[in-house]
Length: 58
Image 1 (cartoon, rainbow, N blue to C red):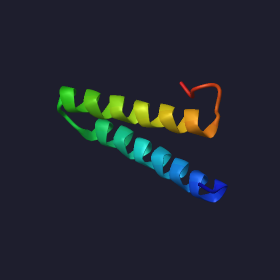
Image 2 (image 1 turned 90 degrees about the vertical axis):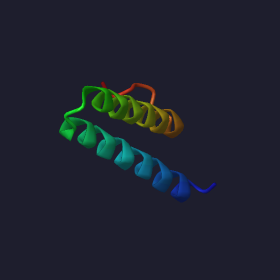
Image 3 (image 1 turned 90 degrees about the horizontal axis):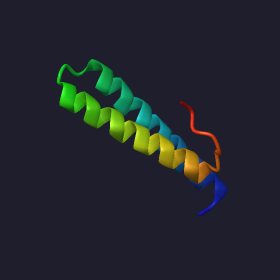
Image 4 (image 1 turned 45 degrees about the vertical axis):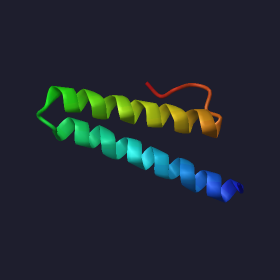
């Protein structure tokens, strides 16, 4: 996979993580909010690992 493809895939993962986090903020169901937040965190963490970021952004 080329570096441009990798960069685009990582950008897409980060955008999806951001969308999930926003959806979590807008839901009134606590279990759904937690599920979305966890999914967002996993996706963000995976994108950071694949990009070579050493420190997670927390």
